[in-house]
Image 1 (cartoon, helix red, strand yellow):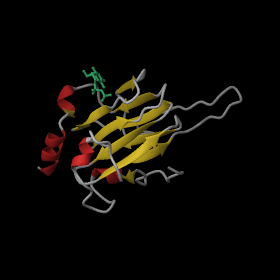
Image 2 (tube, rainbow, N blue to C red; image 1 turned 90 degrees about the vertical axis):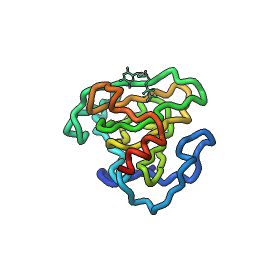
Image 3 (cartoon, protein in one colour; image 1 turned 120 degrees about the vertical axis):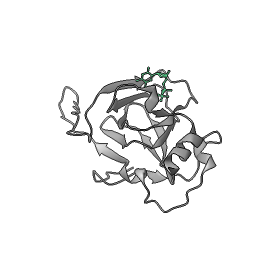
Image 4 (tube, rainbow, N blue to C red; image 1 turned 60 degrees about the horizontal axis):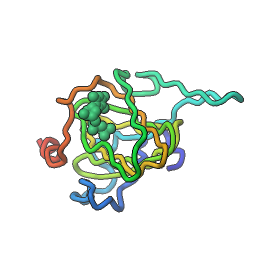
Length: 169
Ligand code: TYD
């Protein structure tokens, strides 16, 4: 993932998926341009360089296209574990690797793509109605998510078939 201009979709089409991934079950039917995936993008975050160590600050509706209502993070992730496995009906997020690395696989109902996150200077913006699966966490990886809404289970679609069904309507 090189330096991608902000605002340009920068996740790459999936060429292979783990055997147990929902994304296995659908094959890319279209060229890269698609519905919500076209709105997924990597956002380069501002870095204040300092001999004492770098500082990054994120402000909702400034570096992000949404206001921040919630922050959560996953850590102590066992080797081989996968997280995510859902889409949001409304909630938008920015996913950042605060330490280590992991893969994010996304699907918008038509097209799948994947990106490796390995820097706290860059986040992956996911709009609503994008299925996401996170896996291949490195040892010590910390995944931080900035979300546009508080936690509401009713906003989640946790079944891939239901996601595809909901998108079709
Ligand atoms: P889950 O959505 O499976 O996490 P991930 O997408 O990172 O794999 O959530 C795991 C549990 O935590 C589930 O019972 C819901 C709960 N939870 C909250 O209570 N608040 C939150 O902000 C989040 C993200 C999850």
